[in-house]
Image (tube, rainbow, N blue to C red; front, side):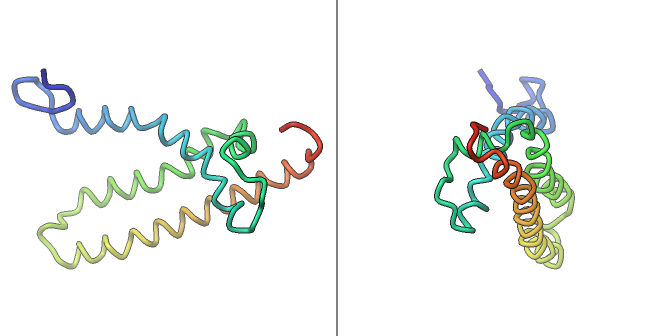
Length: 129
């Protein structure tokens, strides 16, 4: 029994294994992106933050958030994996500098998403979201 291990006997390749793992990670990206609105709310000191509140706030926008939160790291990871970083110190340093930039972009996208969704929730303050 080989499971997800790609061996010549199982007929699988590393590319197939990576594709399967990428597809299986989509639900995880979806959950994390919907719950991630807790971070900007805690950064500005909101007391009502919870995973349930974040889930309600992101209702109807889950896949949009998943694309915003999941696509840049996946795309940059794919791009970085194509670079021969083991052969070049310069490329390894370039990748090491690029990751914090990707993280800063992600934080900006998350903050903008929160700023876009939070006023909608404030308009319906007395109602269930």
